[in-house]
Structure formats: structure tokens, C-alpha cells
Length: 189
Image (tube, rainbow, N blue to C red; front, side, top):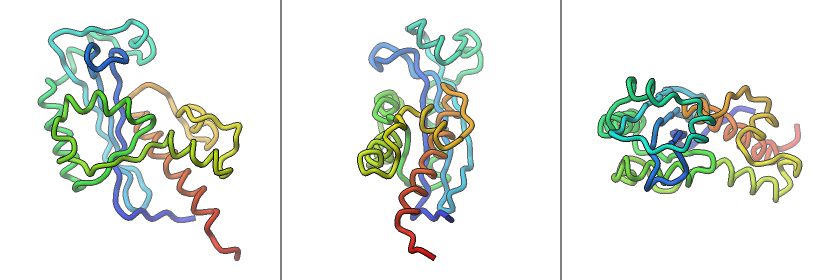
């Protein structure tokens, strides 16, 4: 089944130094563009520099981020925000997508206070979409909604906890979820 979207969607993911955006830093932002033809393009991976890093050791274990190497390669938050604005401008004012995306948005909003001017309001969340499709009987009940379980179900290669890898996997999962819905609406041949 071919896939056609009404407009591109930018899928985005973040890696952080913990779960609390008031205390823990946003460390990396990864983004890809899902085009109207269902193809993924324009990967970008940005590292955010901070004067101080209040991080939970467990968070760094999960992400594999070495904070000293990170700091050497990272850019100031303003430069990362500008890079995201430029990235968005290359597509136009489109909607964002992510997995369990409210978490990411909590860290993104302080970086991009003009988020609603840069991107359209509303967003796509593959976790919520998958939950809906499970309840609707379109996706099997045995499939969980963590990104790792969805990628496994759809046989998508995935190495977790890298912002760019997560954004790419999320876009691929979204395509598969759309195909499931589209397959249910196709007329028999």
C-alpha cells in the first residue's frame, strides 16, 4: 500500500539528564522529516551545551552519553534553538510528532519558547495512536506501546536511547500505524 500524507511531519526526540525539566538539562535533540510520500529524510542530531550539568547517573547509563565528550561537541542552547528553527523553516510550519511526546515537549518548550510559531499546534504521538489502535482491535492486544515493543512488532531495526535513532524509529512506526489503518479501509480486489 502506498502512503500519502497531506503534509510533512517533523518527528523529534530528546535525550535528557533526568526526568525533571526544571532540574535536569536537555542534552540532545534528534529530528527527521516524514515527507508527504511517506519517506524519511533530513536527519539532524543536535547536542546542547550547558554551564552546569545536573544529571541523574541512571539517565546517562540509559542514554550512554559521556557528559565530558558531550560538552566538548555540544552547542549553546541558543544555537540549537536557531538550528531547529532553520530546520523547521526548510519544511514550512508543519506539525511535530514523537513517541510519548509530552515528555519531550516539557524539555523543548524552554529551549524554544516560540515553539507554537515555529511548528503548528497539535502533535502526533505514536504511543497514543498505538493505544487507540489496540483498543480498536486494529493492533493486537499483546503489543505494548513502548517504542521498543512497537519497533519489534513491525520488525523495524532500532537501537534505543539516541535522539536521532528514536526520532527515526518513531517516524517508521507512524508509517506502519498508518498502513494498518489504511489496510482496514481498502476495498477488496
